[in-house]
Picture 1 (cartoon, one colour):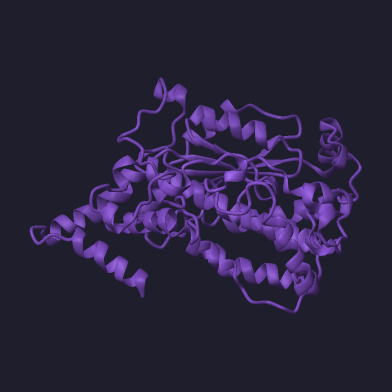
Picture 2 (cartoon, rainbow, N blue to C red; picture 1 turned 120 degrees about the vertical axis):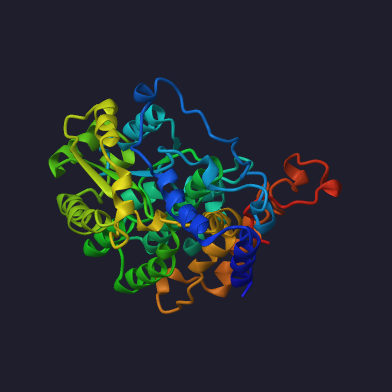
Length: 407
């Protein structure tokens, strides 16, 4: 009900009686074109760094609500580079280096691949994995290193669900950035491709049928809330090349891993190409490169600059870029409020009550032990900024809990 009231209020205030029907239609036609009126351009084509149309909104420290929308419009910051680009590919393909170089050349914000450090290292830098000896087995840490060495562990299902949640949360952060600053974003993997890993785990017996069912239910309950990317870049390597790259980068738990068998890597390759890429190509532009011998980001940028993103505006029935077609300023504003002001609500969509999968449950005694140990660790007793035991000061004068933090 609150969301309905908010949408109605935004549209009511944005409407003025002096606007004629012709003017409203002109606005409806102009806004999407202003957002995607030409191709993405790199620094070389522009002749220098990107010049923002308007000062960035400080979304990390200031919420964007209905009230703020009256004074700060959204589309005024958009230019041809206000796009979401996702870099995908198999393990050890060189995605990190390429995505960083691409973001640098396009003057976009880079978002690295997520990992469980975002959960296990608290805001004060304390590694919560140090608490494992004090915790029961069902409550101990389990990250990518543990998965590589022991993929059949009961916590593998929880690990994959957490990875999806982290990618989902990061994607919301990326949308916050593009809506608040106008600067495009480059992400290393996305929540849209995460199912590839869950399905490969299921095929190899690392994920039970029940856990897979929970994952799919969570995904179907959440993924529709996000705007799909404008462009997906897939760096392709055959299985043998992937295995060679894993050995070359010599990460001990990857080299010793039981996971990266030919069967698992073939499943990933097949799921990426036959399901994810096939589906996302109907919504976004897709570029695929043979990355067996590596490649140059500059060459990819030249290919990106040739893509005409404006071509889809003329056909309202074309599904490509349909997520990003907002005819009116009020619709841009509503989307911005959703991602910048209502992130805790979006994360609450993960609260799907499923109690039929044993490996995703803890008993009451284990939960009590976990809570007592976890929330007595350094910096964990209270919200960040309110923990005197780790040096926080001015506790009596603080009145805010932080942007996008659940109450």
